[in-house]
Amino acid sequence: MRTHAFKAALAELIGTYALVLFGAGAVVANEITGGQVGWVGIALAHGVVLLFTVYAISYISGAVVNPAVTLGLMVSNRLQVFTGIAYIAVQILGGYLAALTLQLLVANVTVATPGPELTHGATVLREELGANRGLLIEAIGAFFLTFVVLSTAVDSRATPGFAGLAIGLTWAGFILWAGPLTGGSANPARTFGPAVATGQISPDMLGWMEVYFLGPILGALVAALVKAFLRPGPDEGG
Image (cartoon, rainbow, N blue to C red; front, side, top):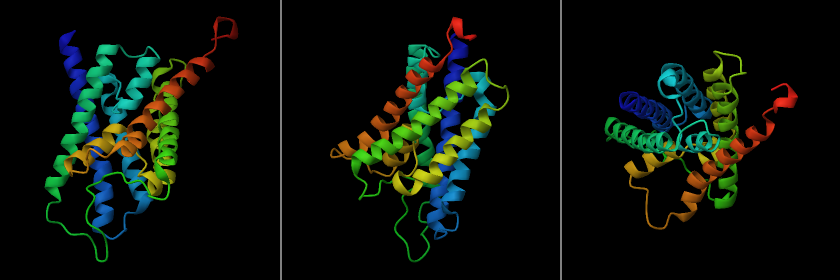
């Protein structure tokens, strides 16, 4: 039992590491090339790596790789509390290690001219949006991501074999819309790793925490409640 728990946690760490490394890496590549990757390429990178991560480790850990979705699964009684806490810890760690790796790999690399300094894949909120609208955008993304996870990867009535595709495309679609607005995170581990690795965390970060932590968590919890409400009862043929 302990061996399985360790393997599952390790799988979550590796999966989240890959997610942040390739996702944030696409953002860095876009900055280095002066926008040649674009938001389509960034969204595709995030979606594809999430797709393959689901297929690669879902049989080991469920391939949650997102602290907000993990909480949604816990509320839905699809994940034990201790397991969920362990997952969240290694997901945050995996994101941080990926950000450190990316920072090391692109050290001393300059961006295309003209352009700003490298963000190292950090998710950035457009100033004119404000924290409240940013929070809502991130909550919407996490809602649909969690809802799709619960409907495809968890629900036994779902068509088998398509969970990875559905989940990956959901995240990619969200990033296409929200990328220019909030960075399109919907995943606290995706945001936290690059922010810490690049020293962007400061005591005056309450608004940032609301957007990228509270937003996805609220979205995931609402998704869990909606999915529970929609689940057919015994008298509805479910």
